Length: 114
Length: 110
Image (tube, rainbow over the protein chains, first blue to last red):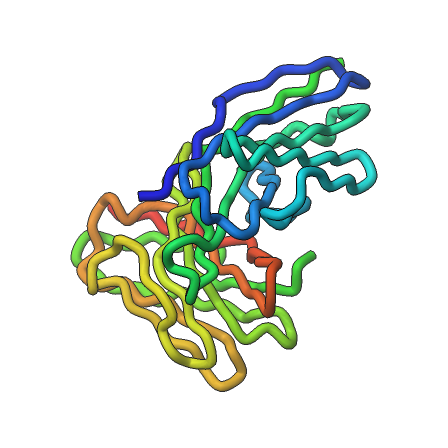
């Protein structure tokens, strides 16, 4: 079945860039998403990219998609302490295209230190 | 704020009991999806409702059931609760590409 993998932890200094990586197995995935989850909270949609795009930029966020390698990344420029959270990669679509269920990775915990 | 609300916020039940969780979708969204998030894990898809019909189901047993109402709000029902059902239950509403999540209901089964 579909699988989404992420590294578990990332630690960066405030002001630096963060890059969070994700790999997935379903090559027919249509949309790919990044969500942010703060402690005790729900998921906040940060951005998403359609599978026929290579890159999408939205303010401090840049998403890169390498469809050949099934690799997605999220770059956060000028990382702030408020960016500390768990970041989830999710993919949609594929074989069950009549539903827009999302398949999530296990999340990457981003810690930003001063 | 996404406009998606869930109730209750927290719930404690014992094994074998039944529970109903509620979700109000964002205005104009006709699709509601439910996810289970165990501690330290990513959310797992339970099922989705579109215009009051189930439209896809994940790998969850039949004791997980749901409803969607004409106003697109939704309920998740879990019968015969097990200890492993302890988790954060998230609902997400959508109209097209974007899925917006509510704050979740934390269910603890003792």
